Length: 385
Image (cartoon, rainbow, N blue to C red; front, side, top):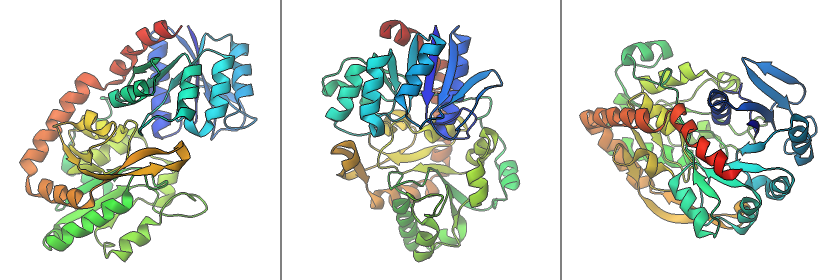
């Protein structure tokens, strides 16, 4: 089968969408399909073959449906798989579903699924979403053309390794308990401010932890012309008196991107991973951390409990808030007080923390490799077409 894979990010980009596209394209090729990748953003001109990947840029606008359909017909493809959020481009994606066989490979991270989204799903052949709760929420909206297809992780890169060697390479102190958060700074969905407040509360209750713990937040920490939708996390940390206890990456290094191997080293060097998001369509860092035998604290909402379950800790949800851009769907408000309690609990229970990390490694080995992710797609493609 000839597949046009349409995505916001190049498979060469060191981002979540980039890693998924890179790995899934290769897995689909292994299954005997011919994959062509249309990059909607971050690459304006030219078509390339890089390391076996056929990559096309969209020169006339990031989400130009006319160009996507034109390329689809030129390639004489059998199906177009769109990988990414489709709700920001709802009308365009609805048009695309009428012009070519379209499979949406997209997260559903809010409830309910809105009529704006349901119209796009009905026009597509299938929606392949990343969580079982997402499948159910779409079915609650009256659409049955939906299936489960999670992401995966490369276990040859993400694996346990020597803790002290990783810290030495990263320049992290070897005598501190390190909390690690890996999440983009765009809007408030990742709840960075809540994480900082919870950590501040922990240090207030436990003055001993100020000298013995460190919070590493792997993100771009500023709101500026480079990141207009972000929060000024550096100044938030300073306002809370946390400047000595919070470590951000060098901003330019972050923007340049780091390799999977460098990302894995951060998980290998941390004591616990914390993803206190208000919602997640999947939560790739949860399984990347788990593959490195690192347990996570995350929110009891959307996809996150499915990935962590009893092999980590879940933050209580105290209320819900509306997402107006999505047409009045809802996401969670995680409890800052409960998050702070969990930060203290894992600090005091290192043996339990390590055991949860070992269980997460086994979970990823059996359920979230890229080979396992690809195994869902044979039946999906057959059913869709």
